[in-house]
Length: 323
Image 1 (cartoon, rainbow, N blue to C red):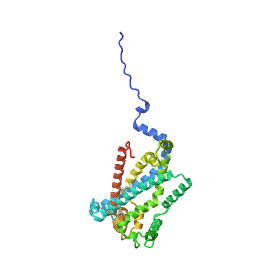
Image 2 (image 1 turned 135 degrees about the vertical axis):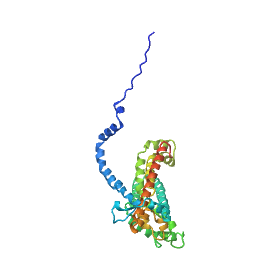
Image 3 (image 1 turned 180 degrees about the vertical axis):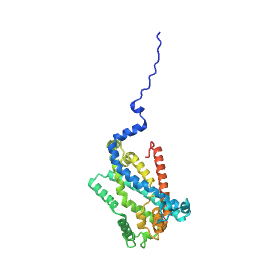
Image 4 (image 1 turned 135 degrees about the horizontal axis):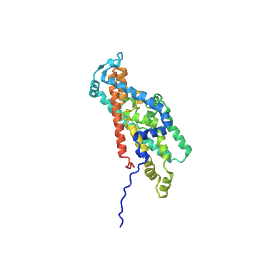
């Protein structure tokens, strides 16, 4: 009986497997050299205007005086941060910023998704285009003009008070912009009015990528319009919603500047002042550049932490169903 000798085959490695990661990186880089050259101006702009100015964060650890050189300033360590975190007005401003950002985030997401779905369900093409155009137009109006329109509408003799009086919902005109507890709601409604049409563009684009055969199969199976939206349209928007959520959570402390600055006043300052206005007040109006830089640095660090956290959570939920 012949002895059968087992022969262990040698592991054959492909050329790609034997290459190092660095070699693969440069190989892919050369394959995409045209795209790399096209992106260089944007990378250069990002480096010059976003990363180089971070050197100015050193001001937050100094008692900065504009007449002196940056290296001749008096270093005070964490003194500005200690003063910042002991200041009651800072926590009031931080509360306003988080609340206004959360309102804008929730309303912006919900209204944009709902409007995109409603526009997608419209069958009259002409009416759909008219609605899209009307909803887009406020986005191209500057906040200076928009704030004047809102102020005029909410004035004691404005259209809002006139309509509410005619409908007998109020007995006398209300000074809407003179009461702080109304400011957050007014700001949220203003942001929706100005940006909802523009925010729907990306959702409408995402809806067009959904396979129409899924809607046809669902209709044959007896699914009504609401069921098709719930089980086809919304799951199709899942990836877009997650990406935009990550981007918006990274800007959770960016509640805006122009609407708060233009619509706010002395009567609503306890509700309208946010971190950006706080930095402007201390930095430009009071000349305390170190404290203003410390507040701006705090906002950036917290936003970066939110961005990383949201990205990590999104990766963990990547395989799960949102709807």
